Each structure stands twice: as C-alpha cells, then as structure tokens.
Image (cartoon, rainbow, N blue to C red; front, side, top):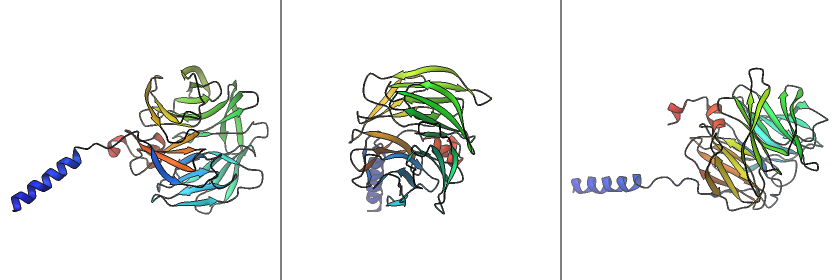
Length: 304
C-alpha cells in the first residue's frame, strides 16, 4: 500500500509539473470602477502594491495591494493637477506626471504627502515618465493639437528640454543598461531609440519600429531589453526586441490599452490599464520587468 501511495503521489507531481505555466494569456485582475476613461500610469512598489491614476474620477490615484484589494489611495490631488504616468523610486516615493498642472509631483507613499518636485509652465503637459537605475528621470510631453512633442530631463526643481519638434511623444522607457532612451509617437505610430551619452545628453536618434494602424501608448522594458508597447484602439500589447523585431502580440479583452507595468513576486506579472472596461488586466511573461529587477536590487541569478 505504501509503494502504491508513493506511485500515485509521483504520478500526481509528474502530471502537475508537465503542465507549463500559461504565458501571454490575458485575464481580469481587479475591477476598479465604471469610470475608466482616464485609467493610466500603472507602477508597482516593493511591497507588490500596484498604483495607477484616475479611478473613480479625474485627479485621483488608486492602489491595489499584493492580495488584490483595491482602494482609493488619494481622492483628490491638489487643485489644478491631474495625474498620468507614475514611476516609483527605491525609497518608495511616487513620481507623477501632472499634465494639467505642468508638474512632476512627488508623493510619499506612507504619509500621502504631495509636493511639487519640478514645474515647467512652458511644457505642454507632461504625459509619461521613465526612471533609470541611476535616478535619471525623463518625461514625454506631447502637444496633441499640433501632433508634436518634446522630451524633458527632470531634476529636482527643474525641467531641462533635451529633445523637441518630435511627433506626439507618449510612451517612454530607458533600456536596462541605461544607455538607450525609447520614446514612441502615438499619432505617427513610430518608436524611436536614442542614445544617452556620458553627459546625459541624447544622440543618434533612430527608428526602432513603426506601425500602420491604431495608436501607441505606454511601454516598459523587461530585463532583456524587450519593449512591451501598448496598442491603443487595437487592444493588444506588442513585445518588441531591442533590434525592432516583433516577438509576440498579446490580445487583451479591452481595446483602449493605455499603459503597462510589471510586478508579482518574481516580476513576471504584467498589469495593464485600459480605458474602456473598468478592469485592470494581467498576463504572465517569461522574464521580469526591468523596473522590478532594479527596485528589488537583485541579480538575474537570484531571480532565476
């Protein structure tokens, strides 16, 4: 009987292990309310909590803890401010692109205190942010009415214009090695790769990939440098290699896909905001997001 029990247990474990994890299959993660037309800016902190903007009403921030419980994190930002992109540093501070106040806001995740990190009245917005492992903070800045856009480098108390007269700059990301800035243009449907030199200036702008239809919105890198780009209106996230090759296209349930972030215990869970369903969707990927790896300060050997 004991031998039979061991055989049954062995077969059960073998069957379980023989079923690989389903990757790139979207499902609903959490419902965050019927007001979804401005859902954006997902970012994950070191506790596994997911932050995003404009649930319930414009000017709010939402939070979903690691157990999947949704709550309003900030009900109302200061008057005149509306959030879009979010990035979180290693100390747990939220940096928020305030597109109506022309600010980068800094929010203490413990006290919820909101301060102005930098302000630029001549900026169009800003729209989205990227934060490098070395603390470099860049912001995209589209002018939707003119189909143009800029890129700003953000320092404490200061916006520094480093690229202008582009298309409608939107999704923005730094490569894992910190040497390349990626930025997409929503209306023109182009993704550019630009070198970041030793003086933190931009050079050697080159086209990574372009698309024939639908829009482009937020995007993030994994630890291998692959870009996950949201396709607004198409309802997909496209995975693109550093060489500009499409590796995978993931179908979502909603169509108005606005942004993406990585989290979960191993950094291999993608969280996607959409502006037409009231749900945040999720899917699993092969390799961790680079922001997760940087935040956790672990090596790939530790992850795998």
